[in-house]
Amino acid sequence: MDSRTENGRRTQRGGGRAYRSRLEPFAVFIRQQRQHRKTWQEIAEMLRTEKGCAITFQGLHDFYRRYLKRQARPHWESEPAASAIQPPGAPPSENGERRKPVLAATPQSRPFRKPNPNNMNLNDPTNII
Image (cartoon, helix red, strand yellow):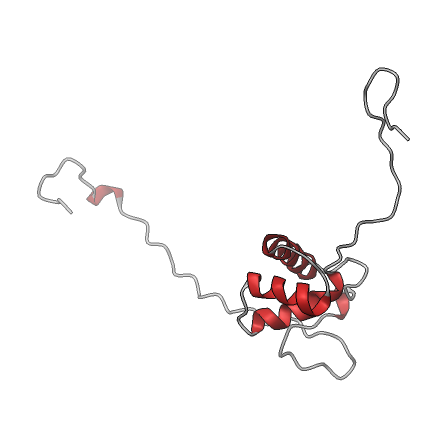
């Protein structure tokens, strides 16, 4: 079926299944191999021989880079409520509420000494600083 209209332009067809990479089931395997300091070529060869998934090392690298980028940003629905998050290392209070942060004390203000305009001589060459 041709997706072109009468005037030769493509029509936009939406829908269909969302794309899912064939490497998605092997993401944990890829991570383990990278932790064992395997190169992308070695991992691609292992996927081809052991797992039956033919992929180039460049395709493998691109997939894993995108996979890590997706993992760094959790979905907004899966994040816990902001009010329930406590800072790391903070002990929970007895009633479950967060403690208010303790602010640093500000130094005491010093009195400002206003210069005496009678003692100022701006044209005096002996008062060079």
